[in-house]
Image (cartoon, rainbow over all chains, first blue to last red; front, top):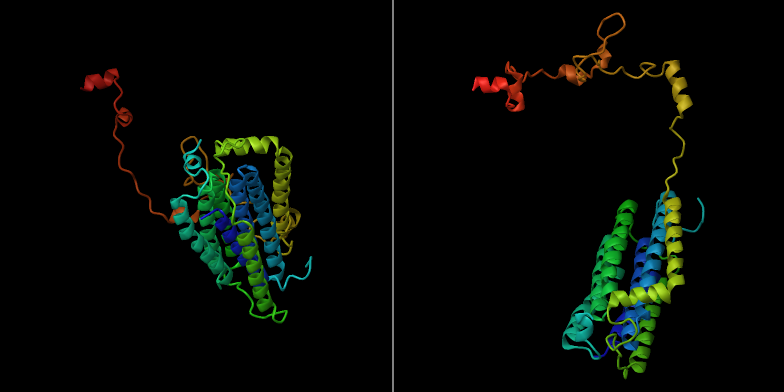
Length: 99
Length: 272
């Protein structure tokens, strides 16, 4: 077994996340699928850091985590404000920026 | 140098292989369950499972700091935030079955499978002969994971690090602005309107209720206030206090010093 298997797992997880983004309708679940894709990329970054023997990949994964945290905060706030005005969390019903 | 880094120098040890083949399918199952679960709360918990598996993978791949950050930040903070918003939005706001674009789900599924096949085939073909260097091989700052990461972040990636701080502040402000619930102004009177309504007699009395009496002998809330003509103001005592039967605590002993534990005064010595 080589660390390539981690990359394969990461590719599979990324694909599952992409399928979730395409298939699901609930905005919160779509967000969770995006989180899964970011996590898959993090796994591949950590694996590349190990393969190359340099810590830069881990630093990039660290930054991905920080940006993901910020993204989640803003995205969930947007979902909540949409829910407050439209009473729905479905991505099909959000077709206006205001009201 | 950490124990983990010493243990896995170049190759994948047997224990790591076992951990991978146990936790890898678990992570995949969690991801699939997240996508296909009907209930959004179930989806969130499945995603927590996957993230825990990934945290273990980080730790056994010589990234202990990232592994613990994954547990603390992702499963601890972000996923709990997801659950929080799920509870706010309502758990039963599940997926609509109506398809807006015809065949979109099947097309999405097919595209996803195609993406998976392409990615897996490309990685499996191109990276078979990879021999990992490993982080214990003496790369710069790789001895201790946290110190190495810290050195990199504060030297090479300092600008990006500062940018993330700006990003976090902006995100926090944006979330506060977006999630701020504006009161509609309907059904809520201002101070001036309230005073006018009071003077017009819409309330029971103009002034607030009087407080209880405060005297030299008592300041209990059970003590009624006294009106200017000397009579008792009945509104100064809560109705609950008047309705509660009084319970005396019993007679106090005549010697007050007995309450303080019998200080060694002259009188106490005389009594003994």
